[in-house]
Amino acid sequence: MEKVKNFMSKFWKDEEGLQTLEILLIIAVIVAIALLFRKTIMDWITKLLNFGNSNIDSFNPGGE
Image 1 (cartoon, rainbow, N blue to C red):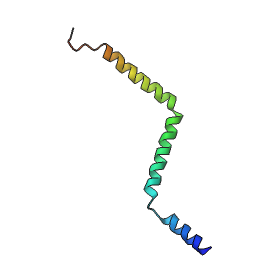
Image 2: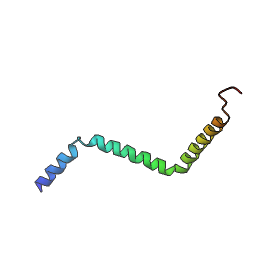
Image 3: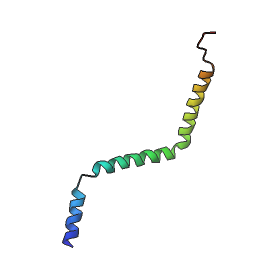
Image 4: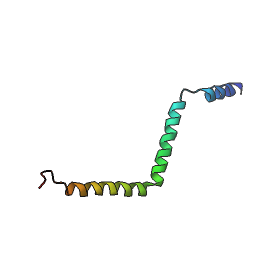
């Protein structure tokens, strides 16, 4: 039992993998937010792309 307790104590205090865990948690939060607001995000992207397309269609580089 003492070996398990020592192992768990060392494992808990070990900070070597902490940075990886933090990055994974940040990515998980970003993915969760993206999934929650995917319709809003897709509508926003569609509006941006349509705005760009309308400007490109009306662009006249020769000034004619």
